[in-house]
Image (cartoon, rainbow, N blue to C red; front, top):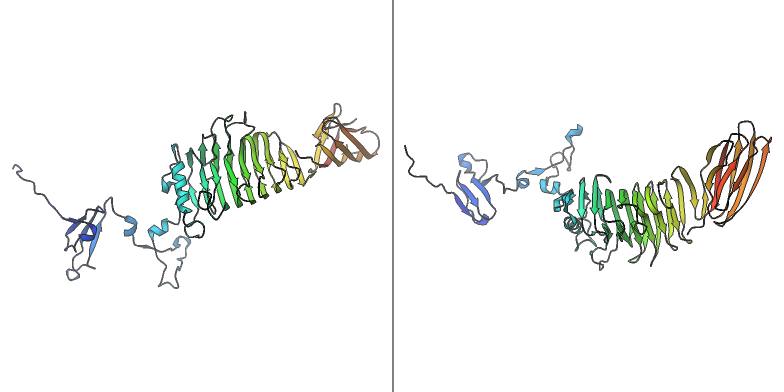
Length: 454
């Protein structure tokens, strides 16, 4: 038969606060919160409790409906007792449980390599290290996660005191910037504006890479700038410029002290590549000391791996690799440097304390014929003890030298068993140390020298 009328079914509706008690199976719609409810009915009708039950919609707060969370740990084979006893477990809402972890993606960052994530990342940091409470409250602070991805940034990310930022690995979480005049990371005070009572301190940033993609000849800013920073660690990070060409002024990390003194800054398992210099440490005001660079990788740097100005006190390096770099280090003449166990190309840099360097023992096979160049002597004075032998004949000696950079004077004092080695150790005017022998032999030596830093 033909349909002549369609009935309209309506349910109760109103603001959330005005919805009345719903009768059994009666439905009600909250206009302001867009949520749907149905009446439970009376206990005399068999309902377990009076009141209403929410019907799930796209506007429901599902976390508030899940009940309470109690850690059990049953996957370990033992159910944990979280409270005073089994009968009194500690309960939490699911919302509070999820809030234990925070990600930049919770604040709108995408890491898709296309979207500008500058505002979202700064918003995350400023909310977690709140402008109002950052000086005296630890409760709001927690580690901000940067899930794997490429986060494009067009401006500077401000790093306040106590910040802890963690990525998924220096080749997995990348912050990429084409801005040639602004750093990607820059330390700031507790109010993010220069007026905070707490300056940069107690930082931990790990597992991410900072990459500059702008024209290398135009880059005037470091990838990361630390000013007046104390007690900071940077672990498993990559600092990468665009190219080594025309990049002699570009420093990947710039450390200075215009805001306050710098104390206790450590780089561990970091890489510095494709720029002018890796780490540039310049004291301008209140002093810089206790900078450590350990287990790091420097390569494709046209200028120097690390540089310090004259008044920097206390720089130490351990177990670093220096590939294609203009120079390993430039240290101001007042610089207090300790360096152990690095390697430049294939040559160990040995032990450096202050301005005295002791290389690790070298073992070199010396053929007959043309001179074999061993190393280039540093400007200054030094010596090395050596042993030369072919298994039968032995020569023991001490080679001492003084080099001005354009002239070298040297003396070779030795004792030799037999005369078949007919060895000659000598240095030319530019400091190239060479040896010739009358028969194939093995040379072992350990160079000790005073280094004149520029």
